[in-house]
Amino acid sequence: MAGFSELIKSFGKTREYIRDFFVYGFKRRGDFRDRSSRTYDDEKRRAECWLGDCIRLDDSVRGRQVSISVDSAHIPENPLYQAYRAKSFTDRDIRLHFLLTDILSGTDEPLTVDEICDRLMEDYSADIGLQTVRNKLKEYTEEGIVQTISSGNKKLYALSPDTLESFTEQFPGLPEALAFFSEAPGFGIAGNTLLRAGGMKNEHFFMKHNYLMHTLEDEVLLELLTAASQKSTAVITTAGEYERYSTGEEKEVTVLPMQAAVSVQTGRRFLSAYVPEENDFRSYRLDFIREVRQGEPCGEYDRISEDYRRALHRCFGVRFDRPAGDVAPLVLTVSAGKYEDFIRQRLIREKRCGTFEEPGDGLYRLTFDVNDVDEVMRWARTLICRTVSIEGGTEALREQYADDIRRMYDMYGGDADDAVQ
Image (cartoon, rainbow, N blue to C red; front, side):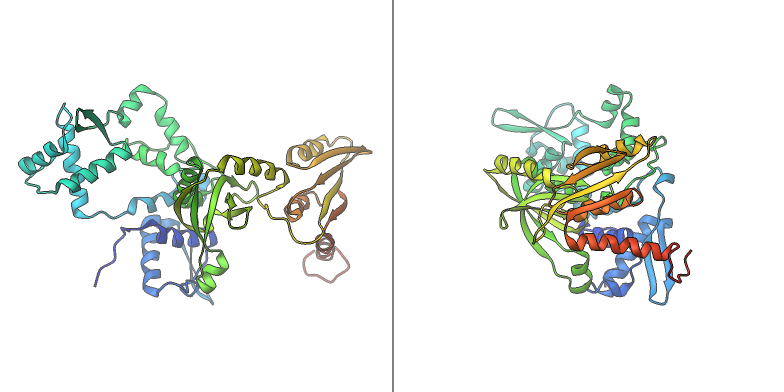
């Protein structure tokens, strides 16, 4: 029977578990119905090995619940980066890596693949096939570790002169820049890896509002941005929270990636994409995307991109699809005092695609003709004590807003006999 190992072959499954512990939290073994108990135990042990003191265990009547608890304002490094450093290698791969770098660093002249194979045998008695060495050199060339030089019909290989040490000497402020971008959102694992490779640490920057779980989506985001840069489609495998924990169902969708969007309210990241099958635009939460496969180039990408830019003018948040039924533009009237110009400035700053008017007498009117007025209402609730009237939208939405007001009145000082005063 194979023993437990911290190392992993595929990051996808591990990302699922760590994301569930960190983002959703407080999961019991029984909540992972589509996985065996042994798989759950192994993934939990890996998370405990990587994240150490960040793991929190709570015992309740439902059983032992696992979550990850960390204050981003008090740590110099995102602890979730540890999951990226657990990829397993075969003995042959790791041996060949060090032998190739040793051979190429020990010569001033570029070598052919045949010469490299000869030196592997002469210096290290390593009988490694020509095709294996060629494939490894091709991989290192794509990653920038090795550069190729054409000499007639021959292809020569040499170590790339672009090293962290050379860049540090050329750009004196590079360590500080790496320290900042190692914790800034968006592929911070790259900056963190370079810091560690140079024996450096982040000793300058602490992010108070740092969405640590974004790093778990970076692998997916990279594939989507690659497809967008190549103007090609992508096949994404999605599963919402309900499907993942109840039925384990997944859904494959072919999309044309347009843009990555970040919610300023929740910090969640979304993919905005065109769905050819529906001939419409949709948004997908990145933490619900399990896998991405590159698709085919799209000859109409530029035209669809222009349509997307126009569609953005009707998006208050990330929703592109308009609800069924009659939806009128939402008109929100807000009041502010004589010396409360900051309210006016806030409305102008946060109205996004809405229109702003000043009818007078300290009143401000905002009109939103958007796809999903519910997204506007979530923002409008932050102005609840200054709202004079709400018109348009849908009747159900207005009734829900009025019902929320009544419930708050009953709870905080109304006539109802409530324990909260």
